Structure formats: structure tokens, C-alpha cells
Length: 203
Image (tube, rainbow, N blue to C red; front, side, top):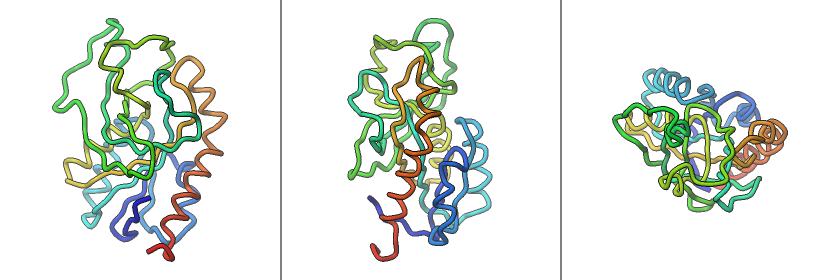
């Protein structure tokens, strides 16, 4: 795992439960969840970075669902290399996705963990995905709800983002209920792993 300078690193997530163990340790003074979903994440991150000019790195600790065509198993920690925001409704021909300035943003991938492309739509996917919605989805490994908004704002400030996402569920009809039953235990594992690697004795 990368080592991060505590004084220059914002450690964030979607909600406090994904950061509560890290918040209890004084090694990292800049620990703050930035909200659930791309929009909330973008707004709060922009506000934070506008008032904390010394931030040089962002670490996101969170969870994700794995798409059925990917081989990652629950409990796997993924450090994605890029993030998109592709909407299922558009791929199924039930709507039209509005154009954006950029369709994806790079992430600083940690090679100690599984990699892959993250899709961060604005809604949780509950539709069955026995087949690819369209060929472009073949490159997507995992789904998370915040990374696109976070990466977009971080890019504006020229700050790299490294994300560590633990796989809690398979994306589909049961994904939300699977996430609810597993996120706490998996988040504890991820936060404890992060803290163990960031200990002063490892610097």
C-alpha cells in the first residue's frame, strides 16, 4: 500500500461509518466524509479543497459492487485506475445521457491491490445484468456511487486520488441488500488495513 503524508492528505469516504476507525487515530488529522453520491461528493470536496490549499493527495476509502462479468469476489480490495459515469437507463435505450466535458477521469492506482475501471452512475443498479447492457460496459469491473464526482473536482485542483474499495456485493437486484449486510464488517477490515500500513513505524 502507498504511504501517505498525513499533513497533506485528505482521507474521505461517502459517510462516517466508512471512516469512523480512521477518525479515532490522530495520525491523520484531515479525515472527513464528503457525502453519498457523485453530486454531494463533488460539492463538499470542492468546498473543502477551496479552504484547505495544502491538500496534495486524496484517499477514498469505500465500498463497491462487482459487475457479474468480472471475477472479483466479495471482500476483495480494488484500487481502480479510472472512473466513468455510465447510466444504465441510457445503455438500455430508455433514456438519453447528457453530454459531459469528460467521460472519465484517471485515478492513482495502487499496484498492491486488484485494479479495474470503476463506473459511478447516479443511481444504484438493481436491474438484472445477465448480459452486457452494451459493449462499452465490458471494460467496467466495479460500481461505486461517489468516485466520479470526487475525481472530477480533484482534477480541477490538480490533486491525485487513490481509492481503496472493498467489494461488498454483485451488482444487480440483490446488490443493495447484500451491501447492507456486509459493508460494516468489510469497512472495518479496510480501515484497519489502511491504518496498519500507514503506521509511523512503516515510514
